Image (cartoon, rainbow, N blue to C red; front, side, top):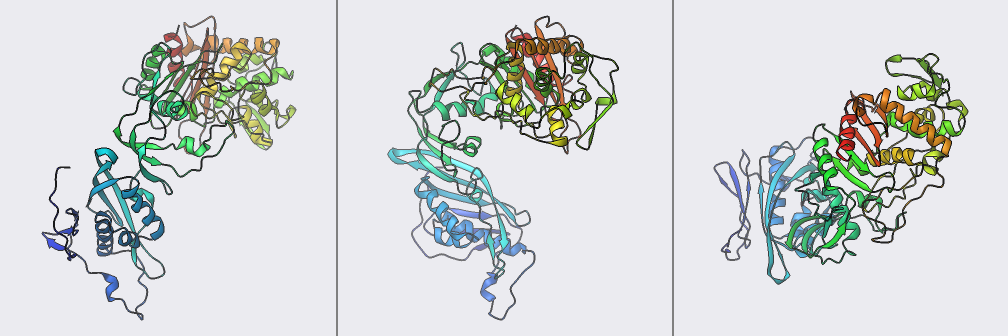
Amino acid sequence: MGNRRRAPERGRTKPAVIGGMIAVVVGGAGFGVYALYGGGAAADDSSAASDTKPVKSGPLSATEVKSTATAFLTAWQGGDVTTAAAATNDTAAARTLLTGYGKEAYIKDVTLTAKKRSGDAVPFSVKGTVAYKGGLTKPLTYESELTVVRRVKDGKPLVDWHSAVVHPDLKDGDKLVTGEAGTPPVKALDRDGGELTTAKYPSLGTVLDGLREKFGKTAGGKAGIELRVIRAEAKSKDAKGSGKTAASEENPDKTLVELSKGTPGTVRTTLSPGLQTAAEQQVTKKAKSSAVVIRPSTGEILAVANAGHGFNTAFQGSLAPGSTMKIITASLLIDKGLASADEQHPCPKYSTYGGWKFQNDDKFEIKGGTFKASFARSCNTAFISQAKKLNDDDLTKQAQQVFGLGMDNWAIGVPTFDGSVPVQSQAQMAASLLGQGGVRMNPLNMASVVATAKTGTFHQPYLVSPTVDKRTVAKASRSLSAGTQAQLKELLQYTAAAGTAAEAMAGLGPDFGAKTGSAEVDGQKKPNGWFTAWKGDLAAAGVVQQGGHGGDTAGPIVAALLKAGS
């Protein structure tokens, strides 16, 4: 920022027009607000108003947008919170946040520079200094934007108030606070003791944030001093007893400026450095791809990666899983005696249930084929034809009781979405058998599904050992029967060897199994491609959104990870 000489206190003056630029000088602040507008300074339209003049309506003029933005920014920069708040359409909320900007966030010496307007919107840049107790200072720069609207009752132009005007990371109700960080930092380690960083593993940003949120206060670290966005969500006990609402887990507090580093505590994870590296490399090959690798015998998560790093789709995504859901559905049909791997099973071109007509990809049919053949080719009608023999809640119970899904009770060490298989009826129930309807999953869920098929018993995935914090992991109320598990493995092995997964899984047998899936999504030209498989004591799943058939898109990613871990 540099040292600035402050001008002596004096009264405010009207803006001077200099070469088409409005230069607003705030008395006593020693800083300027520069509005890069094409026109000159505008008179206050409201000064000419009279009691008999009609309320002004219609689109805002350029002059109204400029003068309103300039008045607001000038008052804010000068520390005149009352005037700045009065220039908005929510005086109380604006006054609270702008007051906290100086008194809670400790942001000083603010310079606001307005840029060329775009319609009723005025972007502007912010430069200031975060100056905390004990001489801790750091510069602060960012870009923001305000929008001018017309108040209905009197036509007066005002800044449309939202917290994002003050900082783009703020949502309404959030606030900026500088002080000791809410949680101390953590040093996350892989299973071999190496440090996990986003520089080395770009996908782990949200995972590391989650580890800090969960273990920061118990891992032995000391918090640093930070400027942070504090979210508005109330802290209340959820089903996991974490003291955080679901909303706050999805939208956690955020560090903007670190004034002093804290002392990190140490948290060891189950991630494999080799598999994590391979996963990071694989997801770069397909846009919107995500993948997870776990160990079926224990539930340890060995790798997690996403092509996009802003949201952890692999753990928190909520997507229709398409035909990979047929793993669960097949286990249900076998349990109920409605299908058997080597017995004949209908696979017609069409099957109708609940008023919907279902068909197979390219309208194929298998005449005189077995259930194993239908599963391997992902025949939709082979499953829909059995819907009339099922209760509405049968699939939900199978997902919860055998595969541990849909009960919102996984405790892996960071936030997750634990799958959803709601009770549905008629056509929606039938669609659920195919992984459509209301069914929602992510790669972590589907890696767990194929792992349960492999071992016969659900082992809740985890990223940090439960012994670290003595948390209770989720359990399923029953395992697959020996007969059902044997047939389910046979279906998956045949699909990997001779079905829709064969090309991707070539060379990985014989101890392997796989299932492909494609999920139609409204508004997408291509379906989401899914693939889940096991090899030995490794299980993996992946999705490529808007990718097309799972065997062609997610299949190569998953197969490469299984090879890398062999």
